[in-house]
Length: 593
Image (cartoon, rainbow, N blue to C red; front, side, top):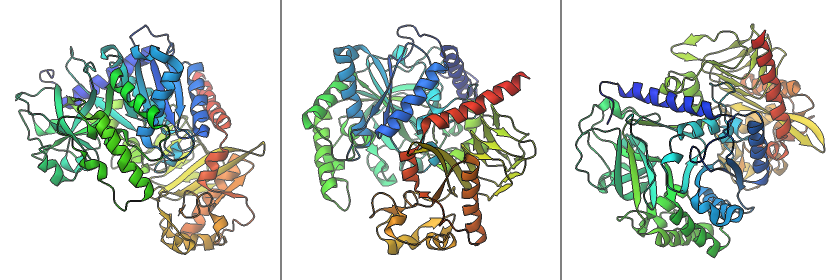
């Protein structure tokens, strides 16, 4: 039961802080058997990403930022077709079997999906979403540490099996003082969070079996009749997924990314992470080894969970539009998974005092770090986190956010902007709602509002180089067109991309784009200069932005140009980590003075 007379928001904050304190006590120390995960595994999309993750894990262990005595692994997807996080789950199971044989029958395993390229939050593209920095902690917490902290109570109340989660979301919850979330039932078990019907359209929604309980409780164990993946409101109503408030106030049902429900009379329970027992994991592994190669994208949520529960039907497997050969294979694979898992139970842990946050886009990132987001108070996020920086101004509840950076006392960063792992000199002025990552700006520079600037170290032909991606935080890097004649529909910093190319004196040819020539986008446009110094790289890319904003010519003809896609292929992870470490040491030394 909920603690009497304690407001839900306060108990949620207290529960979150308790988990953070407990994790902090385990950092850098050997853990006892059963106290923590036996294995923590992170998925990677390709070998380059795999290497980057392994290097960062190695650094964290060396600096004692993670609990010790745990097996940390990075499992890479096979080369070839994209296989989705469901395919990555299959591969992870296969890797566990190869590494541990029957031994993993007895392990508690955390599997974190982090195999995407983070095109909607590109400052996480080079080093990975799971290594996204958060504005608190010393050393600075990244998403990995936060995940481990928030799940700190799980392993000791879990039967052997695998907990599956994603790298870019945060689940906060509070339960009674003597209660714990238990993952001890056969089949699958998922967490459920109360959300508005609108939020339900972009998440998985549980259709729960009827309950006789009329009293409010922070924690409830329920059975799921069927699971709906990103359903319309009409479908939620049709399948009785919509709940009506019981004996608790509407304020209790406001979520993180969910719209506040205080004015709504109805809500649904949406998904976040899920657990599968060892028997279910072995069933999936046997299936994968039987099919051999996977050639389509499988969703661990949409394709696994929709097959579960007594009300599951095969109809979802055919829910594809404009069927192509690949999608036809997807339908067949979905149907095979459905028949494999049909009849498996889906247990639901209902967390009535919980919040689910997603930090996978520039908009979400800026909102949660710089505005009056409730996440700030729940996690204790700071405006200046482990940095040397002048005081940050506040404007209508918004502040800037400085993470492990060194800012001259005379530089200016407007509210609503985030600066991470960077150095800013005295004559730097940053407009509102900007993101600056991994950069060094020593010379005079003015960054227009809504600028995105992220620098990468590159290893090209054995030489260290630098390139800085720069565009508008609202630009859509994923939007693509099929032909050169259609690139006029792409926008860079709110300006027609064709006009930008004219400003930069670049010709429209197929050589302007890397990779797939029938999928043209800002992601694979070769427009970012390669320079020999970090400072020159940032300065040049800022001039690109300024030229577009002022509509004045700035020729890129004399530069070697790369796309973001190519920058990631050339990235020098070791040098980027070294740069961050130099900033860390300088801040540490300054604090001792």
